[in-house]
Image (cartoon, rainbow, N blue to C red; front, side, top):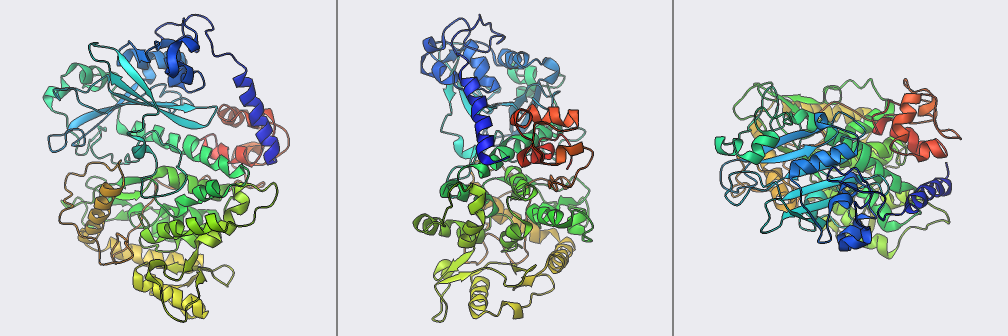
Amino acid sequence: MTAPRRLAARLATLIALASVPFACQGGGDDDGDDVMCGDAKCDDLGEIGQALAKFNDPIAIWLRANIDDKGQIDVTYLEMLRGISKQQGCDDKGLDSYIISDQLVVEGGEAFPRVVNTVCSEDRTKADLAFFALSFANANKTDVDAREIEMFGWDNTTFEYRFYGGNAVAGSPTKVAIQLDPSECRGCHEQPAHIPGKKMPMTPIMNELSAPWQHWHATPVAFEHSVSPAVASAPNFKELAGTGSTFRKSASRLETTIRSAFQQRVATARLRLRRNAANVDEAMSLLRPLFCDEHLTYATEDGASGSLSAAAVIDDGVGSVYFQIKGTGWPWEWWQDKALRLDPPGAPDRITMFPIRGAAVVTYEKQLLATRALTWEHVMRVRALDWANPSMSSFRCELFTNALGRVATAPPPIAEGAKNSDIFVPLLDMILTLKKGDFGIGGTDLPMSIPIVSAEAGKFVTLAKADSAGVQALADRLAAGQLAMATCAADGEGHCLATPDTFGVMIETRFKAIEGQPRTGLTAIRNTKACAAKEQYPNAPHIGDLDCSVTMPPDDDTGDTMDDTGSTETGDTGGESESGDTSDTGEVGAGDCCMTHDGPGCSNDEVEACVCAQDDVCCADVWDDVCVSEVTSFGCGTC
């Protein structure tokens, strides 16, 4: 489907929605049966009510029917959850409470719980549409405050999560004042301030939930999770999440819902922007996740097993590239098992809360590959640089930030009718060009611009560690045209040209070496990265055994937060879940749903219904490459 045709189809849908009057249409009640503005006209509900009339997420729809002209609601937190659940055709069976308990709420005190809620969890097409959190203690710090609320709702019209806040109204035991898009916590759900450019889409939950769910209530065993007896018996906590509460669920269930939010909602919505008319700022923001870690998540050694996600030492994005090249058959442990086997298992110094790349951006990168917005060669050009430092690499991120001004001053040519994806490659070429003076690069014989590119087809430039000496050496070799003469050590140390096979062997050598070392090396890396995350990422979780006053960064004047041990990261701790090949030929159990074709829908009714429930264009116009990619990204099938 061409971009204009798909845009026209989407505009037709938006116009149809916009033509529906948002004024009162029938009476509302506290359960939120009416999806408009209750017994009042939306215009009578003040600025907040009028703004809500333009939104189409589950929270906005319920608020429109229940908010007053002061922007307040007068129901209990549980009544609100039940109302939003009922409005979507769900009941209490799908109302879940999850508990994380750490020292983030009461800094320096004992662990205090936060409660996260979802509704409609029994229906996978609805479970990730709304998230709620009670993240604050009451004045006496004896219970969670059920009137200080954070809420995220997915807007199916604009393809984004909307953020709402609720604050207690003084003098009332139940009233809550609603805020639309409160600014004070955006930093926790967007990229941090040190990463420039157009803002990434908001994510509903901070990326800190991964097995074995440290600090979260989990079954059969919770890891470093505790709630004091006093708080456990307090009325709000006890009703929502106390022992015996029907709403209380294990963190493993929430992880599934969050991954769905990242994969089916945030990453897929972002991927759509590649089809927009070419805009340099927007296209650069779509390439930024390859270079800068907009979000982090945290990997923990699984109990007494000695198993730690391979994401701690090899980037999951690299694994995605290899999957795209040939899917299966790579012989290496780092790719097949995706787990480090640390010895001895069950050691008291087990690795906890190791910062790795956030799930949302890793999923998005996989989808760029799966839809062929970028080829594996394009992605490998980025991820093979500073590859032994796969998370929080200042070198990769500075390549991007250094290019921002240059791209703004002299953007690549844009052909008439071009899409964002059409300028990805020229922008990548501009970003992957060293300039004299960048990273301290110097030398009288060096040209002003040094492209980081291989002249040999099928090979790419690898640089294990981008410290100042390593970057200077690479620049010298590139400028002299002698890169083909460079050799890397067995574990990839240094710089050289590599093929997928030779690079995979180097990764395996380093991976096995780290696996055979004491945990002290990984712990030092974790400490350095975690302290940097605490400084730079507002959503960094509490890590109890971390003392940043004694954690010194490595002697590396490029600003990297890694040492020679090497470390990598990926978005999640589970097995490979790439969306795979979405070409016109491959299909696995989904009929022609894995092939683009003229006309709406596809031959597998179940897959078609699942995709079209979340992207109606696929059943209203043409089944294009976006629809094909959504078969897997929406969890409807496998292509």
